[in-house]
Length: 243
Image 1 (cartoon, rainbow, N blue to C red):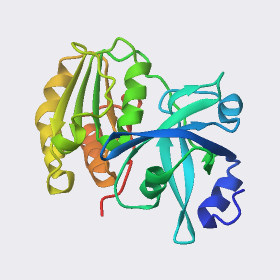
Image 2: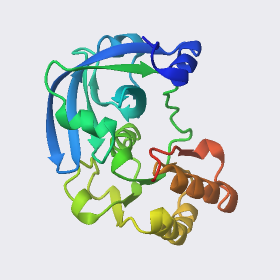
Image 3: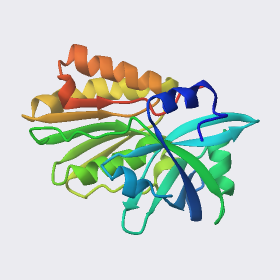
């Protein structure tokens, strides 16, 4: 199935990635710019199992060329063989597909590289930085880490993020909304001003960063090099590239 996917598909095939075909069963607009699509798993969950923040690579057609993007599984149900995917809508092949996906449509997917290692000792406080693109993974993380309190810096325009499906528990999870300005520089400034005090106030922090690639790199370097957070107490992954 990786044939016709260019060098990316060839590399994944060499790495023994597994391919599956998903079938759309329905969809809904959560907001004007955030859409949820429900699918059957094509045998994925039985073959690969389930873990927090689990993601798959979807293959889209982009003007005749293969185009892959990664998405986190939402509410995977191994017994039913179903899950949902959530799309932060913008311009591009993935968003175009999500907008028009209807029951019976299929899409090919590859599973390779996903994983989750729960921090040990368990976090005494989760310090997360994300945006609409990483919200499904953030929700999965908060579910997985159970009773740990969390502080989340969430980037995005207030009108676009107000009705998003956060799974934050009132009183335990604090959402600090940060408007996107200066290509992410404003978010970096906020985190640099507020994160150090929270780090020093908790014995076993866990830092999770999932923004656009440039912002993620800047924050990851700051947390590791300037704040001295060890690599086993943090996770950083760029979820999209700013134009």
